[in-house]
Image (cartoon, rainbow over all chains, first blue to last red; front, side, top):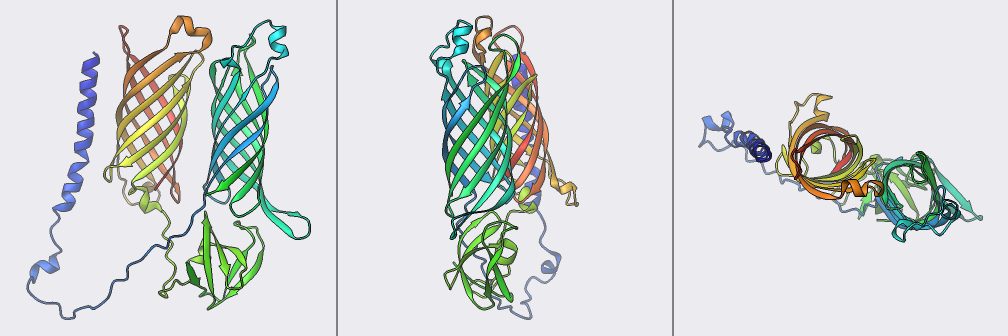
Length: 224
Length: 227
């Protein structure tokens, strides 16, 4: 059974590859344009002396990516709140939308839930690690004024995405919702204030429920 | 890089966005230096030293050194069916479990591409990780208004699946690594610039060392870009 399916798949992939070849071969076999074929030796009446201008695409520094670090506090539902830190990478699609990947972690310290329910999380199980991929929308772009002479570009944004959270040794499918504020200190350096909810289904303490793990952090990113 | 203003004047805004106020103008004949570009906005420096942001649409009306309009060939629908690389993220369902996957592809010719997908499957009892490589054959659609934004494709490939049970099921299930193969079909839909949406269906066969092979259906959809 196994080998038969493999042979079938191999044959299908070979066919797939072959199917794309004839189209290209046909392009190469095209006959020359009819006008040239009729009078092959006649020189053209006017020799055009047009110098073809080569369009050189100017090299312009594009800065659509944003990379940085952040630190804050995450409250792991039913356990306790602990310092968290992580890295983020964003790609700006338009002046309104961006996509973002975040990778962060915290370590849950000894807490009341463990004492009350009389269990101990193992060392590795205390790690609360997540990654998420989200879409962001700049809802309120603008400027902020600090003092009389300084104005900085800023934006309030919302983000939603999916990811995975590993806690107590298990990975959970996680939905992430958040709101953040970005202020550009210079043309390439930005400060972030972020609040995110990492929500996933949990059965850790017996009854199934949705655990909301809210994180607040400040971060710094550079555009490149 | 310097460009010359050809319109009566060029408006410089305080930020890279449609709402930022115009605080400087540069008149026809004067030159500005391009500092950088952020999406559709160019930061320029005028001879006076003033810096500001100009939209792509206005930059395209300035002249470069040769006296020609500044060429700004951004990716468009033409490049949708004719590009080298594409990258994307997809989310979906793999045999009843949630799937998150990232992929990269390289075009071998107009219709054939090689792709690598990495997936994380999050189920109630197990976590699975899949790395697979495959061939994707795109069907080029006729050049008709909305139709050409669609590119249906068929795919075939093979990979490895790593299964790890969740803590509660560790004793019953045990972790294992199996080979798999798949056939699939889907479509891409061009959105704007270098961005497109993508959705696909795959039928997997997992070659287990038990009596029967396992068949798994997968649906996923997402967002990708090419360059």
